[in-house]
Length: 207
Length: 207
Image (cartoon, rainbow over all chains, first blue to last red):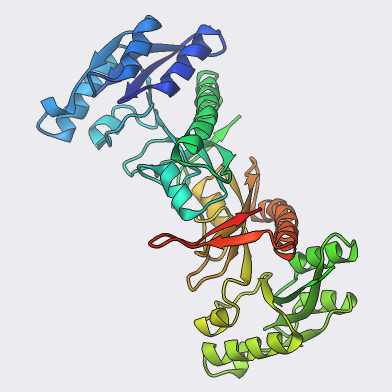
């Protein structure tokens, strides 16, 4: 079976990366993580990757004068590693067209809300502050906006009485893990299609 | 058992009204619909109400010079009928403060999306156009915005491949019927509470 060559961009603890690595280890996911790339030298995700025998690299945005130059360095490292798809797994930098045009419609992001509700940072806090009763998570293709790209898959998660940001985030995270693994399996199997019609948003179908 | 005295405002076919009437007829809902009030003389909802022996009235917004005067007439009819809570069941006029201050935090609306996603008209069409994979329905307290009030309850509904506006609307409507009956049962039982904190949106809790 051909493995899907993927790069994973991280900034923090990397729990979604761990879900991907666990699914691969369990032979449930035909994905080859070619590189885990962090903009933060101390990201716990790097240790998770190393423990799974996956190559890692750190490219700090502080070392580049512009966002485009930083993105160019990311693209270079991912291409050198042979990555064809990119997963943003808690990566806290907004990508420029330099990056997105290098991997057109092949960058996915995991967002802890049912987009278009609660885009941007602190999505769980936003849902709590709004008083929503249902939130969830979204995996979407990344475009040049913040959390605006075509939606691949979503899962609902109820808010419960007494939830705080931590308990809600933890409950959503369980669904994020399942969702990103499911989406990567669909991509690896060639089941994902992007449908573009004149004058309309691109839509993603699966099947 | 004391029955909750409710007025229902309609503009069209009134399928959510029918769900309420059916639950009352099945003795599953301790609600007394005191009046069904339509701004459209030909609304099918009026015939549904009459068939259930519920009083009806038509107050056309065309007969009033201002939205406030129209709302004043609605308030008068609802008060005369003894309604203490108001359900907007496909009522296609935006209410002014004249109405909302007469029934403070006692007006509920049923919206066919998971607010704050897809507010306003054609919510199902909006969800399809966005390419969302999960939408749903919301029952919320009405405030002076359009679909911005405190959320009481929500239910998720998946979008399916091949859905059009009609198939999606029909699937959401099934959940709307369940949700509005559940919310009215909670109100009638005194389980609904509005929590207001300084500087924050009012939140609704149930229990």
